[in-house]
Image 1 (cartoon, rainbow, N blue to C red):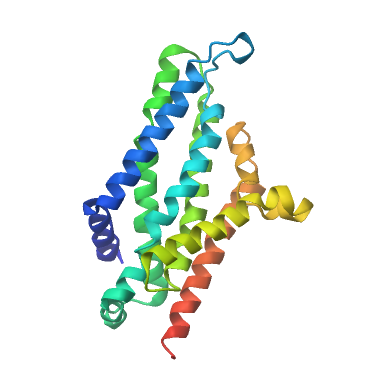
Image 2: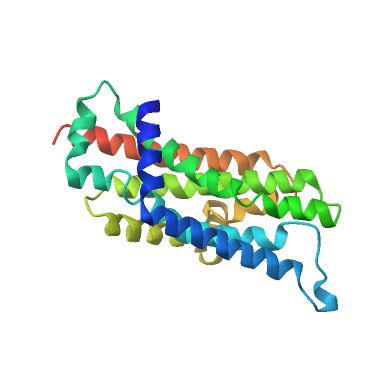
Length: 231
């Protein structure tokens, strides 16, 4: 499985799509952080925390995650290499896990590149270290949830753009369930469970929600891949 992960990471790193996605992510998150730290109005005094940037980073991840996963399986299917992968001594579970871990590692790399933000906060103030760590843990889990949806959508089609659009539609629906789905929608919504991480509170239910969410969509992807073997 590790050779598959390395291969996928190398393919993504050499892709101009990843370069554009990474550049946009770093530029927009840097812009949001700078805006937070340079508030001039008395009622919006800068604070040594990532709360103001956290939600904005989540929004950016909503838009870029479909582009990270759109080629994962769809491109393999279009080029015919998916059949070659299926002939390898690699189960569908390991294949899906390898694809997922590759893009999740890239997602983690993007977050690592923003560590300058907490470092700057440490230099200019006395931020709460635990809150910042939990904020990044929340973003890592949220990104994993987004990517698991994207991987499932990528397994449904041969077209990368169709996979990206389908992923975005599913994610935006799950995002706004908190506003339109009542108490049940708020429980299911993928964004409401990020709040506790941003406030420095480790809520086990939110942590388990993201793990179960990721597991659920990876399970669906594996079952879809298994079903295709019988077609």
